[in-house]
Image 1 (cartoon, rainbow, N blue to C red):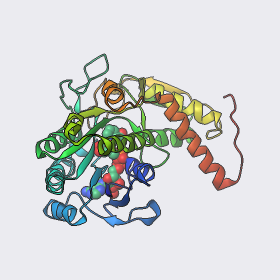
Image 2: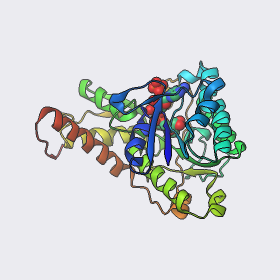
Image 3: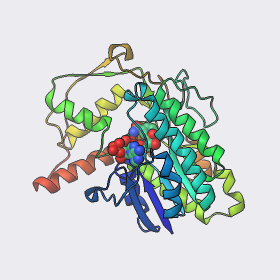
Image 4: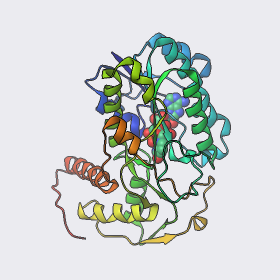
Length: 320
Ligand SMILES: NC(=O)c1ccc[n+]([C@@H]2O[C@H](COP(=O)([O-])OP(=O)(O)OC[C@H]3O[C@@H](n4cnc5c(N)ncnc54)[C@H](OP(=O)(O)O)[C@@H]3O)[C@@H](O)[C@H]2O)c1
């Protein structure tokens, strides 16, 4: 069985290659080939004129689309390219999958919601994106559903990993060189590891393949996949720094000052509250997400072990 992973050099794509290895013949594609990241095929999903024919030529049984335009602030100015990659590519991808009879796994975001709520959001909660990025991802969700192809749609949030561009690595870098950080405390969400997302994807695909064909349509539609609990960016930053200090990744606990969104101007608005309810994931796929603190610990341990391997030095857990 051929499994095509799109966006394989990204945070989630990179973990997917690890999580799905052994399930079939993995073809890892991204915009450019990068063998150091395991990417062996160049495939630009924004090239709409050729996307469908390239996919049909490759004839995968499963297409996992972790490629996306993820620059949330830049998207406010680059509307056309965000829409092409996050929305229009899904029209072509869905059409190709339908013709091939392939399963598509696709990722969407908590940014499809407006953020004015106070309790975890179910999959059928009214959407209302407040940014170009959120609107383009919602349009992509709809295009995939409208294509009529077999699909699993995972909505996730606040994704980070031990590599890539993410909040965790930004905080570690900033805390290492600054005496104090200021981080917004009035946006609440669910920090989610790319590793959990990739492992969950593998379990969901296995269940899809093993289940009766006539019951597969019941698995269509969004499914929320995030780590458990909720926290503000400020609370997350404090936890990152405390745990990183315990693991010797930082020399000291840099204080984090809580600020309001208005004090940190960003081009794109973000939902104030976007905690996703994961009951569908548990009821349908029998997966209970780990607490976000557990995911954080695992990711920092991975970083500490990588550093240990590089320097040859040991690390010990200390009280900071
Ligand atoms: N990161 C989050 O916090 C977050 C939250 C909610 C949902 N999600 C969703 O989760 C999925 C994975 O996100 P991620 O964090 O892994 O993103 P990421 O780290 O930005 O990875 C995306 C990958 O897609 C590639 N890509 C971009 N445009 C492409 C194109 N035209 N053709 C082929 N590849 C292209 C990127 O390459 P370049 O680097 O060269 O552009 C990158 O390797 C996305 O659907 C995203 O919307 C992410």
